[in-house]
Length: 115
Image 1 (cartoon, rainbow, N blue to C red):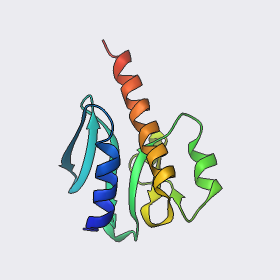
Image 2 (image 1 turned 135 degrees about the horizontal axis):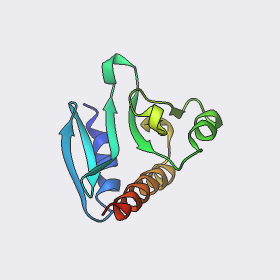
Image 3 (image 1 turned 45 degrees about the vertical axis):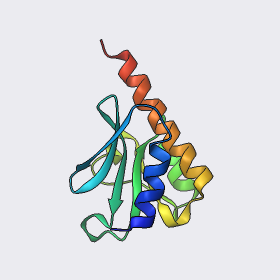
């Protein structure tokens, strides 16, 4: 596992409230209110990506992915739900922090809607 990158992601995730981590599908996965908001992907099925997968606001997936194809991609499984993949070696800490915080806000907002 790319320890430097997972520690980078872990640090950013744990700056947010009510975050927990557990291994899901063999990779570190981060939760808020029992819902996933960041999935670490370390060369998932030998796809060559050391990345995170995060949800983005509705309608933004295509624009984000087309803005920089070296950094963003549509991940398997969760891509159909509007998530993006982010190449960790291609993104600054500032921009990655923004995407992680946005994902957290999206998931927390959905949790508030649940009875």
